[in-house]
Length: 394
Image (cartoon, rainbow, N blue to C red; front, side, top):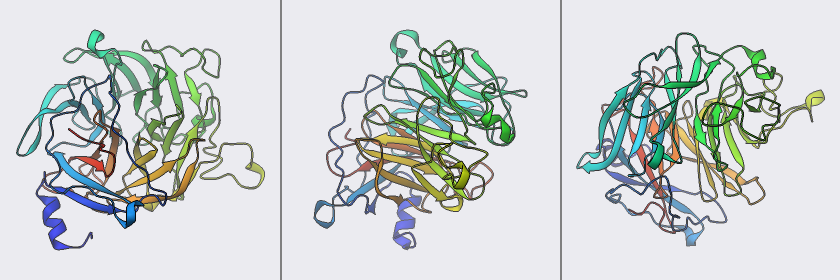
């Protein structure tokens, strides 16, 4: 399908919807009617021009894809406001853009909210993750992760205001800066960090590098953290850029390997995930010392950044692999069957992945980050609607 001329013409029209026939899960996985989401209502989006439909007797699923926003510059994080619009960070420009809820024939309207001062966008650093307070309706607060000339840091702010740092001193480098910020189902803020190209930091409990952190909205260690008076939730990570929770409130993460294996990990408090001693699954004398990933891929097929979960499906958005990997989760916290590749090579490098309030998935491209091959409409926001059950209805 990727090489068909009519498909390429359809994709390059920008807002046109397409259907990707994705043989996802042998047992089928229906997305039910989305539950109400306190974080926002769905934007008023037109339906994809092609309707998703099941194939092969109902055992497979299709995915309808629409380009809903274009012309962005390395969109890194996406977070939804109560009105259904999304705040999108641009890594290199340090801008916060608002996408929607208004739309026109070209997609959702994109406006610049503000440009943050003090952001140093060098290499993989810059303005990275963003999260909206669960109490936004009353406190109007958002949280951002960004690089300065000295460190990576987490700050809280109101739109139009100055960031107020709550955590500073996160190790900085031209690579491996982590950067995802998300609120967990427990109401605490989770932050991913990289080893900042200093491998030993991941095994140092006193360093914030190579970790997943858990904190209050004031940047203090959250109650119940595994190490006393520490922000550290898990350690032994090389560079985590995607986290998401399943229906059982289990935390899943994508992780960049070095040159052999990239990973999907099920994160548990206080556990050690092995880097730099182990890349991928532990072998020999290291077996049992570290938590093994549930999924590994060659780095050429993955290098996954963002992660999102809808119903029982975990999706990882991949940069070098230029695809989405989709996995069906079980009730016990395992992966059922083999992961399936979606959108392979169709939109280039994929960065952010987030579950929208209407039950659809939003994915950002990252073709202007210096490693991609941008097209005139890049960078773009894609909206994915899975067949069966009404996910993504407007």
